[in-house]
Image (cartoon, rainbow, N blue to C red; front, top):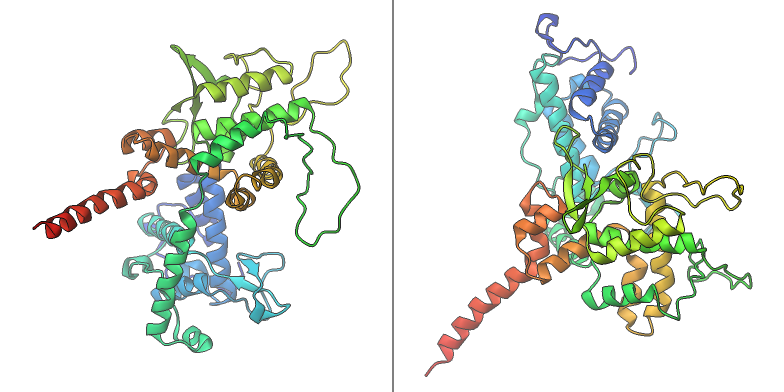
Length: 434
């Protein structure tokens, strides 16, 4: 924070219950109070850094001087970002870069999707409400801020794009339809999922999977690809089938220890404290199917562990790094440390890319789907299959651990379409009667 910038919206010291005197201290207190979960803290930090950089380097103000106009400008900036010619902190890039045919060799900043902008807006609103209620700020500029519509744009940006407000609104509607069409496809169709499961043990699957997938235009190579060792093959099977059965998020899976998988009657369950929950809330209980449990048993045996988990395995990661190739004879097989969420996703993508070339012979569309897939597709696939199996919305929300049932309802859109179709057909039959 530059020393010459002093906040103009700060409250008198007697009203300050937070015990802070700078914006930096206020940020730390807010994070410690509102973001005690590691993933939540990381997400909040990302949004705050972007907002603070915007205020300091584009508006020339500290956060404690933010006005309604600054917040409106910030909304526009998230949709159509730009950086100043000089003064921006080196190494800090709050947006992704993209190239289009019109840009030539120059990459431009890509604005955030409406979902990401809403998350940013919610975070900043929460931040200012906390500072105002805690007495650090005399006013809360967000109280006079209108609802985020997703179509915020400045007059300068309209002129730059050579668009009228009406044409811009039409363009946004077309983009919304295209985005919704993309969201419909982040799940494996039932036929493809059946094939993918069977491919694990198919004779054509040699497990000769390259660490880096070949892309179009890459020169051919004569270097042989080694077959994955047994432990890595069984680990992939476990990641794939467990992630689907438990509808797990990759961060949850990467953090799980073996003692979180316990018997319950005739079944096995996974205890997980995931997104939106804390240790005080206690864990959710996710029932595993027979295929996930079988994959887990096979993977444990490949690691030199007993067939089933036990309560004393609190330091044994569910998904581990590969065991050392050389192990002294007088020592037991040492289980590796856990993998990161990013590595878990990369390992799945390697398998999906590898399987795509085999799937192409069965259905060319399957290959396209597999080459786009990532770890979160398994979670979406589980939710979609629950809907196709006519499982209740409440049970699906519980299995996917959604706090808001509206998040779950997106998997049931096709059922609503069918219901509306039945109503349309009944009217058609009425009109066709003699």
